Length: 158
Image (tube, rainbow, N blue to C red; front, side, top):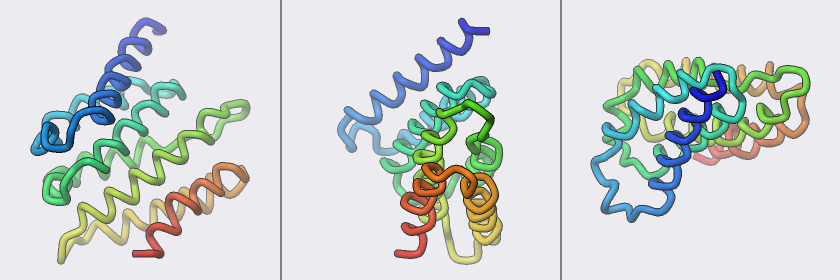
């Protein structure tokens, strides 16, 4: 339904604008309030590539603004989100290649900020990110370059 996709897109773009322009102190402690509607909008957006791009960009911005302690409280839903929201490289869909940037950058922020000593999910999440890059991105030069630049290299630098 185009109307539902537009409404979902507007919600995501509104959150993106808020996160981009609001002062950090105004957002402090709001991660738990912002995350559920963003994840729900990503889920409702389904296969719409524009909604997926906006959702991943908004999630990346939210993770960038969040404190590590806030991210650590939401590991299960974020693991699920990154497991299901990976860009789909369908024939003729150029948006998926573009969505690789916020997906990889957000995934890296999630892995880095949500890690605590004794966390068992981190190696599995790293394997899934590497698998995404090697299986899905490798066939598309621009997507693979974004995966290397925003996914693999930042992890190696840490």
